[in-house]
Image 1 (spheres, one colour):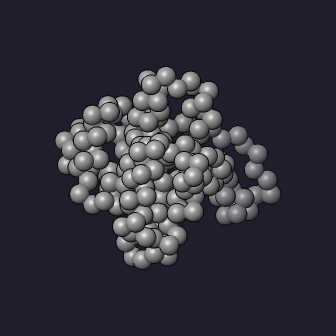
Image 2 (cartoon, rainbow, N blue to C red):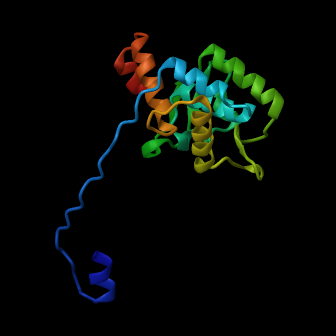
Length: 175
């Protein structure tokens, strides 16, 4: 609207306040531990399974997940560096020993030089957000899970399961 008045109609100024209605937000239905397990087992492709396992195991956003580089994993300290996450903030996430073992096995088999999850079109770029969402959708259908929610529901499940195991909320907020 502002562009129309200033550039099309050539008004010199436009100071009319515009109220934009907020979008309704829906929280996805929470996945149980058994459902997450079924979802991961439903992935035939090891790359896809590792993608969803890392998403759940570290509570990553899909945009953070697809941009993980091999160099972001600190195996000695069991840490994952997330660069430029939401709000362009870097953060460190703890990697569970079992997940670190799986990541090592995955890397031995795929040996990607830069991206942990390279694009299907070559090593030079990472997998797209859309591809990761499709992978989740396919695994969800194959596992018979009918709950609402996309790949972000793995992040919600991670957070909830961490709280259920007794992790203090302020530690979770920092992670």
